[in-house]
Picture 1 (tube, rainbow, N blue to C red):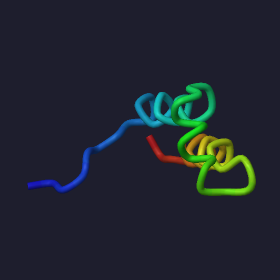
Picture 2: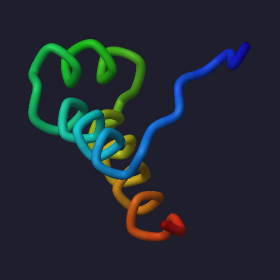
Picture 3: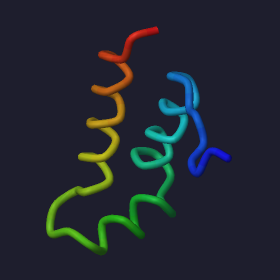
Length: 54
């Protein structure tokens, strides 16, 4: 049995958008960093999506 879910590019981009635009995500994850951690995660996921093979 697979232990993690398989995500396509579209689903990953939706998750990334939550980190960037949903204040519930932003406020929670930014508690763990002095900088805008949620924006960092957003940028990294989007970078991954742009460079993933389809």
